[in-house]
Length: 390
Image 1: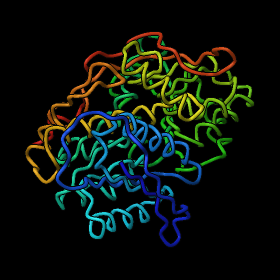
Image 2: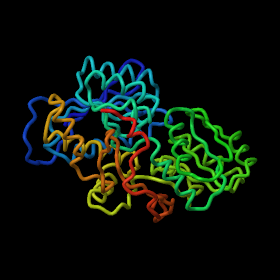
Image 3: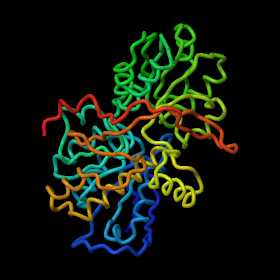
Image 4: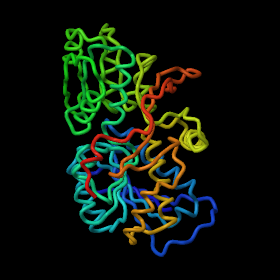
């Protein structure tokens, strides 16, 4: 498996080429190299998400050994900018002739790249972003979301808020597709009163105005979706504000990559997820241990998605190549791999059917992390599958 990080004018990513040696596992050789283009965020405030995505993906390919020896992985930094992502995707499709695209973290970037890519006959395997527009009427046979559908973790949070007895919740998210999906998902399952619905700017770092709104809202809980650096900034400011209204979030706001920066303010917070490092199956135990050994840190949810996506890819390549469009599509759909989440299958719109959990932020030997405290939903699909006609 060859990995290439390439620099384009203005992309600010160093040029390095590394050959990652695999373990000797008997597998038939591919007729031609399979080119995989990873577009992800490796710089700026969202870099941690893309780095973990990349590292989880590469770890799975390394573990796959000979199964991945003919995969050529091209990695480029989208800088969290839709125009840069489109520029990279165009080059990967037209000049590099990639077979598969993957890696995008942010839904506005996915909406800029995915529809055109699949229309050109390329496969797209989503390691994270899964906007509702691509799950319903905009679904495509060559688009597979390996992570979730954007609403899912927030739907679980809404269900948890009901179970916890919260009667009036203040809800907040960034003003972009995933933010809108998040609040739609929460409201789909929450039965109480919405105290206020607020959309912030993407990349916002000052939340004084929003915290003042929370203070005045009379809510008995706050649900927020603010991934990456946004969530870190909000939680630090919220902890220092003196407002004691309890917060609920999806896993993105309390993921392993952000917890060290958030600090003790996160202790005890409930968050919803489809993955946790304490899910009890062999694939997950192997992943957590291997990731920690390889990179010197615990994996985040983004790393788990990257890992599962690479394992889905190698499982499909054992059966068919992307040049055999129907065969490769069927091999992906079969999801014949050991997911770190345990049970995993694709619904009719190529989005996961999976269990969703409630986690609590705890301290283990001085390290902030999450543990599962309840199951929020079982074998949960998504609200848009019925609109998908393919």
